Image (cartoon, rainbow, N blue to C red; front, side):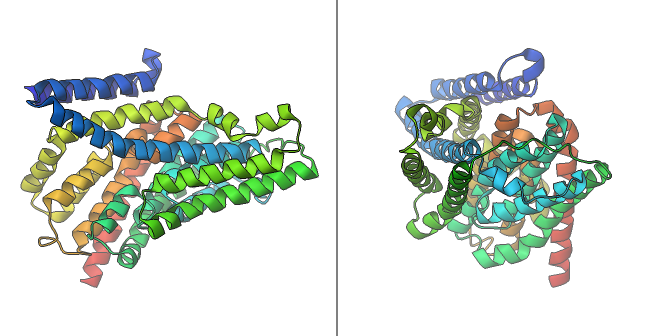
Length: 425
């Protein structure tokens, strides 16, 4: 009875988020209410409020690490943007063809997300598109495909997606093997949707955006901030690998260092002008409602996880399908609705290394499906949530226009993985 009530509250919250525009209610409000109500239900039915409170704080620690990471990445990107740093990149892109530009953007996104991670890459590339495209509709199509490309690019790298990193740290996969086994399926999952939309844009030209006039000194500052910002973002996964600290620690260090750099390069400027380019101003400009929305959604999902519903669901899939690939596909599709992190965590707890040893195809397949399946719904992944906040994408628009493309890519990626497994034997 209590579990049914919890599921009903979660579904109603999800519906309110989906129909944000008709309801004229910000999705952050719906998510926060859903998150708090789910935990209230869980707390009231729990025999020990202390245990439930400890569980909430444990989950909050994990959620906070994602939120601080998101906050740091968005602030660094906002800093680069405020210094016109992205103009240095856009000046190098000479094509006026929409289809060619789309393929360039998607290719960069796919490979960059394997190096950085899908969340940071999605934020950087979405900001870049806002400098290249003047029409809102074009930007929506581009950033929709950026979500698909960032998630596909993150799936084949141990640093590219939280779930792949979890499997790597847990000993279920090794770095070189996951890259070797998943690069082709991930590439296909990204390339097919990109080619479909590139064909849709065939023959269409970009309306050139007017570039801001900058002095030599402003260009030099922009270049310093761009190189520093991208350099520090690349430094974050390296810092994590060397220190074994969570990624958000590296991101906070990067933000602190960016703060020092901006202070140094603007110390001789007039106070009023320098204030416009500070980290404090960048923090004011980032999309706080999106961060609160993410907090609410992850709180709601963590309540389902604490109640044991996600573990029950994983067990149900295991007993119903009785096939590694069907289980993996079902979990991948489910990750579009429920965050993929607790789903993979439940799978790690359910299937031990004796059943599926390190580098078993099941773990590789799980990394592929949970990494790419979330692209079908915009709030299915952290990258989607960040992009939704930056470009104000409507939930239903994404579902109708991009969701089916993500599913085609998802299915094609699975097909390539199975074909690869059959050929290798």
